Image 1 (spheres, rainbow, N blue to C red):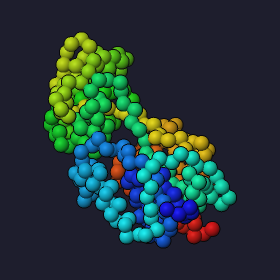
Image 2 (cartoon, rainbow, N blue to C red):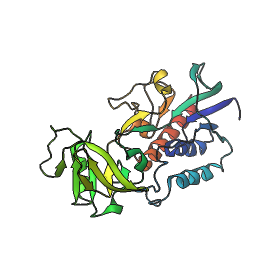
Image 3 (tube, one colour):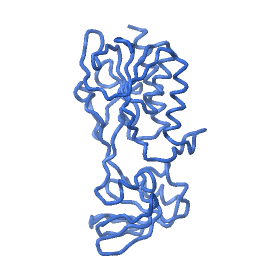
Image 4 (cartoon, helix red, strand yellow):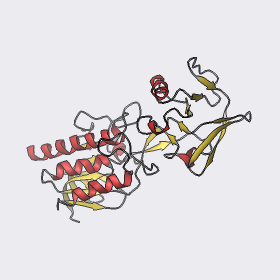
Length: 284
């Protein structure tokens, strides 16, 4: 590991790895910091990605890392970044100089405080019907309605008509088109990683095979915030079409910079940011 790089990427998920591949093909020297805690680690399979529909997430990341081995100027360090400060014509990331920074550290999903959800997260409790849903075609599906946009219900209804909505005690919510359960949820019942039902506080158990919830996003680190990068109303980084944040020299890509979160989208954003950082370095 050297003490100076063209680009330092914070995060070794799909966005960071895709950015490294693109910038690496521009002959840039790159160091990737990765603490190996990917958001989609609980998921057994990665769906809705052309040519990789059903690939386990860890295998997909390894395939990209294998591609990166062809580029000797790309290096990895398995650790979490501790500090980033501005320096003359660049930044010091844990005392290593770089001209450009890509934030690609991802988010943490803040799940509802209901027993069973964390245990089943990524197994039979999901957040996206395009990522996970078709495998339960015409099966018993549930949705916890908290923070869920209206169009979401119709997307799921296209997968199965046996759809139950759970307002978890929020009596003011009305969904006349759907079967609604207003009692507060006590727990999820399950066997291994298989959901069996939703137990309400009135004792009723509604059989379901999968459950969708809206997990609120939280940045896994506040490094970008400390550097002055602006956030959107959703608490994600505000970026332009090339991934540039409000702070010169700092880019962001992946789930931390878009509400349309998927592996494919993260790869696309990473590729764009990698090309933009390479161009900016060459033009300066």
